[in-house]
Structures are given as C-alpha cells and as structure tokens.
Length: 304
Image (cartoon, rainbow, N blue to C red; front, side, top):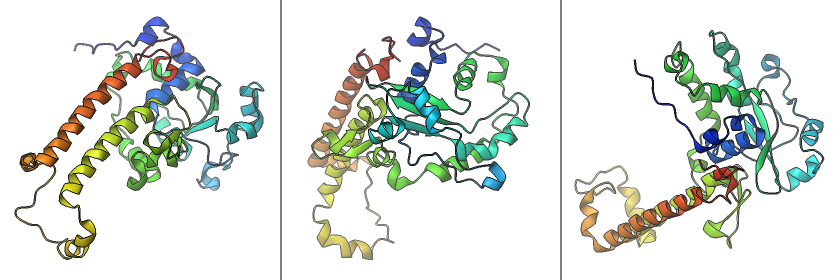
C-alpha cells in the first residue's frame, strides 16, 4: 500500500515545534480549527450542566487565581471579562459522557476540555488555562504522519455517530447558526449600524468572520434580488399564498432551474453576484498573504 503524502505547511516547515507553543496553537484554534466554537464566557466561574452525581462537581477547576496567574498580572479577571479579552472553547458537557467509553478502546483517548484564551494587546490570542490542553497539540500533531494507526483506526468510527448526535443537540439551532446571528450569539460581534455589514467584531483579526461576512452579504443580496423580482408585492399576496401552501403547481420554478436565466432582471442580478464572488476571492487571497494579519499568517509571518 502506498503511503499518502505528508502535508507540510509553511509554519511547520519553518518551525516544526510551532504547534507546541500556546500562542501558535491558540492562533490556529481561532484561524481554522475551531472558529465556530470559540466564544465569550457566558458565566464565571465556569459551570457544567451535567448531573453532578454522575460526573462530579459542576464548577470548573479553572479558577480566578489560575487565570490571573497565566495572564501574568497584565489585567484582572474582572477587567478582562468586561473588556472582552477572555474567550472559551468548551467541549466539557458534549464530550465528557463519552470519555470513559472511548478510553476503554486500546490506544485511544478523549478529553472533555475547557480552554480559556486571552486576547493580547496586539489582537492575538494566547492560551491561559485548560484541562489537558498542553498535551492536546502534541497529540493532534502526532496524528498527522501516515502511520498504520492513522490509516486504519481500530475500531473505525466507533462512537462517532453518538458524538455527532450529542454535538448537534447541544450546538445546532438553524435560526442562530448562520451569519451574522452566529457571531452575535457567541459574543464574537455586536450589532453596529455604522460598521461594515452592521457588525463590530470583538476580535478584529478574525478570518472566519471577516471572510464569512463577505460571502454571506453577497449571497443575501443575490437571494433578495431574486425574491423581490417575483414577490415585490408580498404584502398583497400573503393571503393567496397561505391558501396554496399545500399545493404544487406543475409550472412552478425553482432557484436551481435555469428558466430564470430568461428573465433579464434576474440574470443581471446573478451576474452581479458572480462578479462579487470573484472579487471576494481576490480579497481573501490578499488577506491570506498579508503578514500584518497575525491570526492568518502567524506571529512569524508564516502563511497558512
């Protein structure tokens, strides 16, 4: 069997120990590994909603004293929370019920981790404290080479369906998953009518949010233009629509069909959408190559 090719990134080629450092691992968490999970802490002390009789005390062992010690007296915990300088990556309640079951499988382990990140003055996150966090990057990095265990896990995919189901139940709400609602829900942005896209980001150099909002805005404009073309008097049509909701017209057209291309107004809106996507691609490429954006390129100018 031919081994799969090993993927090398610029950052690892330049510094193979970069993932062992807190600042680089934190940057990768924000830039690509967990951009949809990191959020502002909703409460402190950090608590758990799991049954304490089964899983132990609800209060986390990440204390105020521990966090302030890791922040090296730059700022107090209260000030950091008020200024939105602390962030959390919390998988405790989702994964802890499966930890002991996964660890029964030889050679496998799992952690229900809680990790706190501190936003430094240069808009760069560093890890402050976490459950088993320091050992995590080495395990993630160690799984990259094409070893026999990484090619053929045994047993393959065990508990993956249950873990996915638990994660969806805890995290997935379709009315708040899309941008910009997702950013607001996690405390990563606040509404600001004077800011671009109507949002002010908590972390300015946030690749997922900056790029995602460009795409979200383009798609929203295209869909709105299409819908307005056919439902520009929606208020007058509501009652009629309610009467036929359960019916399917044989000549009903869908967005995925090409009949709309015969409509000049809709076709023009689509061309604007297509052109904007190309412009967004150019903008994202420029951002990815901008060494001033540390959360994209790393503190040492290593592009992802």
